[in-house]
Length: 305
Image (cartoon, rainbow, N blue to C red; front, side, top):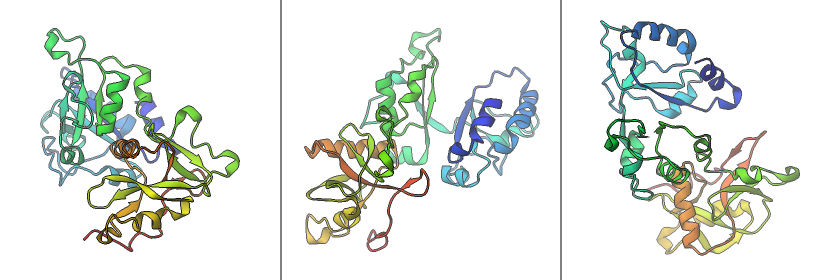
């Protein structure tokens, strides 16, 4: 618990949220556990207004964005059990019982099927777990691999229950900047714009280079690569907004950067399908310090009908 407390309070982790799943093996010592939990992580834990640990309505579940904005209270607790106020007067304020849908690696149908609808991923936590030491072989659930973890992350799985953890598994969570080339590299502080390659990884580049643009459909979330327009990064917003397949399409697309592993995979698919082997611009540029953010200058000129 000390390590968790130290990690989440580091300045570089201020935008992170931890979702912890704690399996109940307390054997009657839940009160002692809650006292220890409170003394180690108390001010960092998300506290629900209701003690009903079965209440998982979207209306009462916290939004990750709101948890980040709160600065503290960025640890969300889940468990396989519930305790009544008579057995623990604080458990229900901090824990929610199994607030997710689940599957095991052996049942994973891969990307882009992802086992559940996009609505489920948007509105629920999705957990994948295995138990390689279960007595019944049918309960073991298969194995995690680097490959299937990458696909699960592309689907936007939230929680992993690794029975046997491998340090390489954590590396699969890197889905944006290309760590193999130490990105964002920004050579000599001259590369202030971001691009994506066919392997789905991002890198920095000089903003005046002529490249095609990644544009996102405002209505469907699908991605296209401009086929007849390329230029410096600063032209991206206008290039996408004015990229019509018909006159009625003007304003349909926006210059964008993927915000999730799923979006990144969809953009990578579009890049490969376009037959473009070169990198293309995404809407991400260097701001103050080491912060990278999109340019929103033209946002508001067009909106969804």
